[in-house]
Image (cartoon, rainbow, N blue to C red; front, top):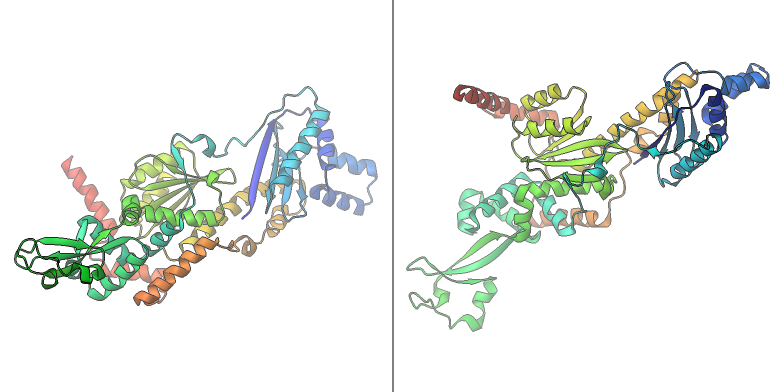
Length: 478
């Protein structure tokens, strides 16, 4: 993952000093545009004075008053630019590793400004359109990397049947195994319960029930405890029969971990958090909204630009878009990623797009390949930022410089998957083994467009129809 950084210095440079600024900064290290232009002028056999005048004294016509690019030996690049108005100096860097080259470059440029304008007041700031994530402490909470047990449980809950069964247990607080088998096919329930038990999302106990009154008498943590010889003397407190003659049944309850992950769909938040940390983003670049909007809203700072990530499990309606639109407008965000474990209705998509015409919106409507989809989306956003940053330099040369520089960061290399951290590898391996033990078969991959068509044909009433019906009902009540 690239790192794109920018700093600006409010500084009005007099025209008669512009050439000195250009020359002094270009002498800090080999300048790409200056070397291209110098080579071109030399091929025309122009005299040295003419070349120097063309490089430093001739005003540029285009998007920049001055600027140049410096290639870095570690694969990145540094640059400086001044806009046509000449009211500020911007220094930037695109690095693939340490940010130290950029920091050193800022210090070098700052030294140049001190030497040329000793009386100038210098205050380096981030660009005015930078996303102020660092000052959003009251509205947001920091995120920590998910613990291994939390991530293992969250990965198990990717499967819809697993979420449904655990949700039924959670709503019942305690449920007998035979009652559970009445609501779910025994094969599905048995397989899913094994996964839930081994991932620590449920607790299983055994209860002794009086056959005469059908009341619970005793509760044990395992069947072995009931069959232990030391328990043979125990008798039913109601009818007096030995407990070995009474009915024994399994009772299942959500574990504290299971309850935690189901509450506010924390399991989905944990999966997305893990994917973001793998990109990799640091915990200082991700925060979660503290507002209770019904959906989890994450704010990401990607190269000083803001991205809103909204997490949805189940149905999403037009009412949910109000909070999304409010955050996009309040923080002037131009990037939205909407992640859902179910199809997002066209009515919701259309409303978001009409309300935010300048916003780039990405919909992820499945948990299959979630990690790679998130990373690809963020990388595509980053390439947009990079393209916007490099294109103005074209006016300084006779070639499409931005295309050459973009090739310096090939898409296939930028999208190379970062090696996963060891805990994540362990989690995925363990979950795979659990599914094998439980007898779960690998699903045959189906193309997303086929799934969407099949879903539309099989549903008697589309999500859009439901939304429209809801709106009509509200109008009638009014």
